[in-house]
Length: 64
Image 1 (cartoon, helix red, strand yellow):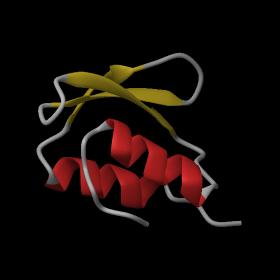
Image 2 (image 1 turned 90 degrees about the vertical axis):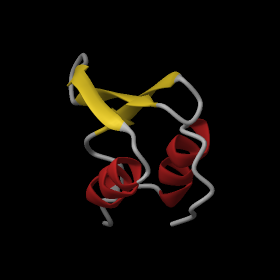
Image 3 (image 1 turned 135 degrees about the vertical axis):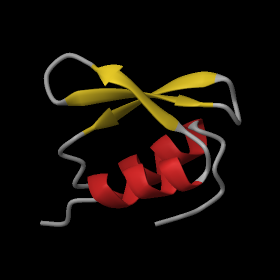
């Protein structure tokens, strides 16, 4: 099963987003200066559609 978490975090950080804190369970909270919004990242992301949705929420047009 694929794990897209590492790829999503790299793309987020390459686009100026940064880690804020750990959330509940296995989630991390990131901030996107592009949209001025908080983005929640699941550390066990195994679906490409979820990864693309997180990037879209962060205002990044990159697709996995």
